[in-house]
Length: 442
Image 1 (tube, rainbow, N blue to C red):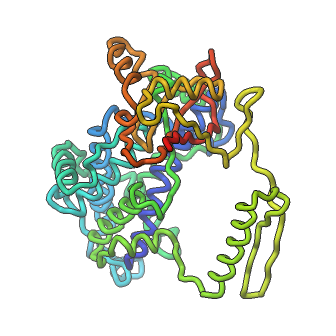
Image 2 (cartoon, rainbow, N blue to C red):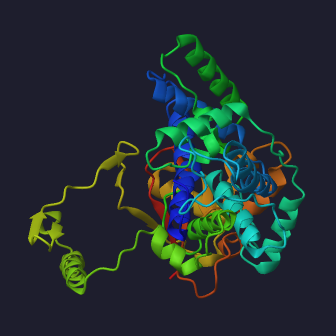
Image 3 (cartoon, rainbow, N blue to C red):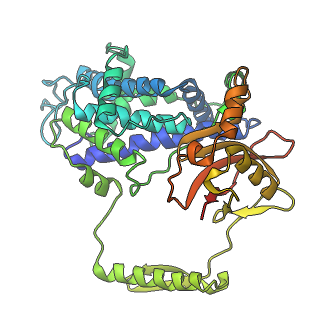
């Protein structure tokens, strides 16, 4: 619906996060992991179309991610707003003769990008960083500094964006959505998303085959090891993952368009995370139940001793059940892992071990071939890149570099967590379900 207060803008921003950085990457991931999948329903065809569009947006570097962010700003806060006002000008009236824009509905105004605006800079950095992480593009270390934000905002200011032109098809879609909505809900992205998805009532085999051919052609042009798509999972409690930064910037930019009061970063975090202040009694019960399970964990009791708890103090009601064992993933005939596993290895040389020695240690320990190494969202070693022509010396230098330098490990740091992709020895296909790797130095 049309926003009336800050929380509506936060909900809108939260929805955009889910669509841009969760659903779209998952759609593409689905077809990458199952190349033989054939859409059988209209919804699956829409999913395939969205996957192709997302693949077209694959960035080559962080500059491309800044361009993506600048185009998103233009779309959400300029072009979409102008399209909405094209359909419903400030003086437009309803069929009953009443002014359309009457409180609580507020007529919006479009916003032009201002590289000197801290809020606009926050938007560019948050969107670009999330987009980069989704595609495993290295995120510069200065994105959180004020100088860095100003630099990337200035870079975004130079991007050539599509200026608004009235679109009668979108106008018709907007009018239809508003008319059909009892609560006068605002159309999704000013009608564009509905247009993009298309209305597919019948599964046309010719259309499906063409889409699959397009997907095959595009995937053929990208090395499999270089197509590392990582959907985000919203996490409000990690202040460094740009999730709340995105919600904060999106919501406040939208609030500015509608003349709604701005909201602080911490308030955004609380509302975006759906945090509802709990009664002390509920908190005490949950804390007590968690402590009981922690004691069992410390005592290394069998899974049969643990319990899941379902509590509703309003009834009151409490139910305990025995949890099931975690699902096992079979990596090799001898090696099985679960979601709760973490591989811990300790290089004999400590932080003086080379990256190549660590990879050999992993290979000999788990009888798997290490392919790529990531520290957080930062790529450390990408096999496909290192094996390209002209990279032999760089590859040799990287493999001979010490862990403390390659992974930026501090002198007093006891361990470092890595995401390592593996394949079976002699095979190229990446294995799914591989645990996080922790290198121990003490």
